Length: 86
View 1 (tube, rainbow, N blue to C red):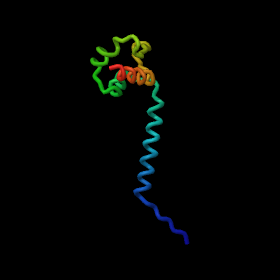
View 2: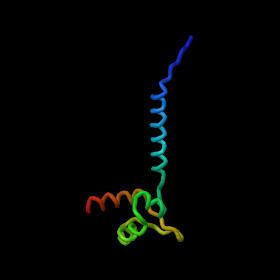
View 3: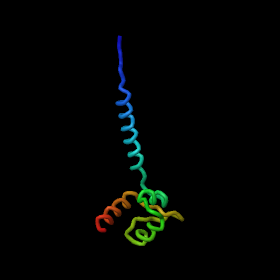
View 4: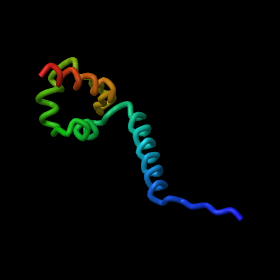
């Protein structure tokens, strides 16, 4: 006869670890931020972003029709430089 014991806590830990890895993969797939996503990513209000970052010509932003898009990777790099400088 064959018997199999499953450690539920270990199984839950492995499951949550895999879910976390999958969510990180999905997050990395996002190439452009919308205005709302940029606000969430930076944890700043739109007015603060406009007053402090959008006035800087080197801040990565592209207009597509009537919509502004912000490339995630370039925004991350810009913010890293900005934080080191200030």
